[in-house]
Length: 119
Image 1 (cartoon, rainbow, N blue to C red):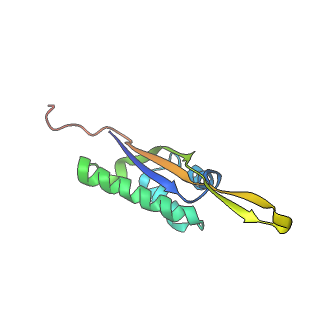
Image 2: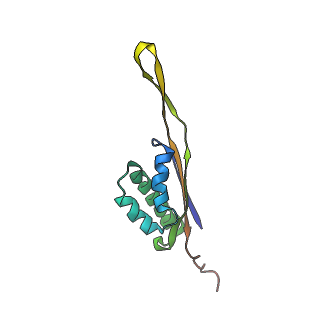
Image 3: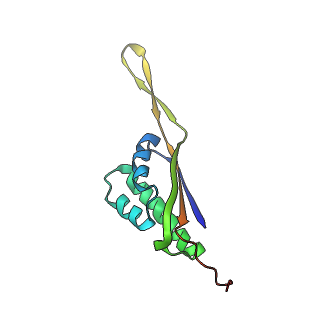
């Protein structure tokens, strides 16, 4: 069973998000939660919320055990850019691109739970 959650239009550049994502890729859900809660980075708080949401969905919707989950895939794609201009002397203007990110997190089971219908 895979639980897939998205966070769209996060106002942080994907390059900065990927630094934090690399810390939790492949880790157990509990360990990833601990790492993100102690990481000093603006993005870590948003990723922690996303991870907590995925874990809550797994527990509530699919009746999975939190200790049996791990971060199988997590990646950040580039979102739309906000284009602004910085005024300079003599009537010039320099472009500013405020980048955004789309984050996708997929939780999977470490070992498959046996269904109750099979004997």
